[in-house]
Amino acid sequence: MSASFDRYQKRKLISSYFSVVISIALVLFLLGCLGLLVLNAKKVADHFREQVVVTIYLNDSAKDVEINQLEKSLAMADYTKATKFVSKEEAVDIVKADIGEDFMEFLGSNPLQRSIDVYLKADYVTNETLDGITEELANKKFIEDITYDNDLVELMNNNVKKITFWVLILSALFTLIAVLLINSSIRLAVYSKRFIIKTMQMVGATKRFIRRPFVFKSVQLGVIGAIVALIGMAIVLYYLNSTFPELELLQKPILLAALFVGIFLLGILITWISTFIATQRFLNLKTDQLYY
Image 1 (cartoon, rainbow, N blue to C red):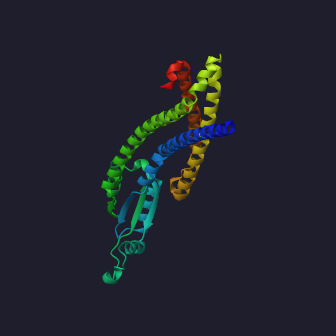
Image 2 (image 1 turned 90 degrees about the horizontal axis):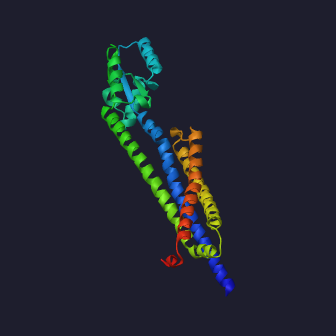
Image 3 (image 1 turned 45 degrees about the vertical axis):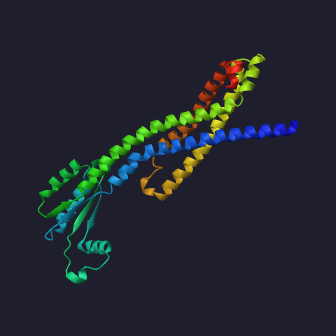
């Protein structure tokens, strides 16, 4: 009978520890994923900004020397990330791919113009910068027209500001929730041993002596939970980097290492503080208050 009861108690204890570890791991994993989002929010936004294209259409009378000089000057400009010259033949292939049919069969001649596609650096993708580039190039006689999606640029910049603001708010809110959830799990684990705490105290054990094994065990669970969370974060990071290599998520290893270390230390710190507070509470309770 005694052996059966001991096995039951052991299973109950293991189940309690397992639930605490899972709770800590899940909360830290979600917090770490949010941290990855915060670290890479600007990079993701910059990636989409740099897809905006400024297309410069050239007159048929434009000389090759003029086009080459223009392309070189654009490539050397501070705002330029990349340039691409599109010939009349390449323009035909692009339009064919877009509309899905060969329009040249009906027209007989190529009405499309040569052009230069300019991809800007993310910090320069603003309406003010694009208007300035347009004004600067408009006085060149061999340039027919300059186009870009003005509405898209304005919408993108507005959305980036809104998303950045809400990501910061959510980060602060989720950090608070993470602390409360882990604290709740630790308090429940300590609550189940409140009678043991009071018994040790009644036989003369000091508060520090009673508190030490609880804190040590909770920190151990915090370390295990943090390691599980970090493994999950590493898998997510590897998957995202493999799926979206253009985002270059591993380009700043120092920041990533700091995030991983921060999540690990956070798991230890929260469990230590939560256990200290929880044990202190039950140590200060009177015996008749343990039943409530």
